[in-house]
Length: 248
Image (cartoon, rainbow, N blue to C red; front, side, top):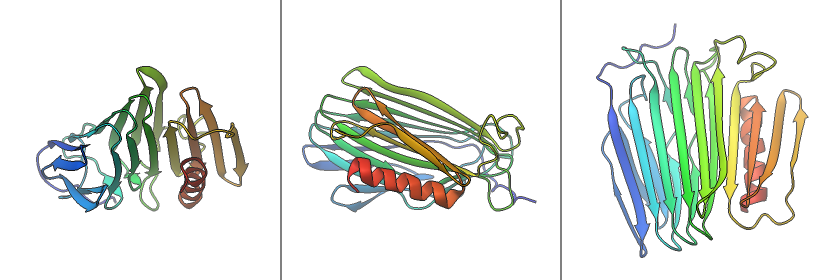
């Protein structure tokens, strides 16, 4: 049986981080805690267990003109069902001024049996800004099929839409987990690169055993990479593509 979710009421929490004029500021409270770990690096720490079904978590990021920020998580995020059901929600909004740069690279998100996870990322880039987003979802702990997962990703550059995509996974749904869906793959990885510097990079993709991956060049400029398969293979493929597209 899966471990029982920790007790406690549903959580509604917002964390904020901004950098302007060379000054980094942040505000947060449990269960979302921000820690500065370098001159231009901040880690998001999840404390107190969860997220649990019913939790509503938000992260707001604002970068001024020419500012740079690396945003990480301290560990994998493990989503568990809540005592009262409902979705666990995590919404990230990032606004980047002209010439700003964001590297958002959280640890894997593990969606356990019975959990319902809905994450969204809304990127708003001014002209000349760049962003690199690397995310990975793992369906369930060892010997689990995994719960439900919805992931929404939108990006605009200088007011123009670059990308709007939604992904649905469900380890207990025979259709979504079948040959026409994830093919019972354990993990999905996504890499989005927005901004200049992709000259000479084209569409690509392939299969290697249980791993399938594809790279699509976007008109913005930008590129989207998706990889589906075993957890380790997905992580390696996404990292290799990140090194190619974003320079390591």
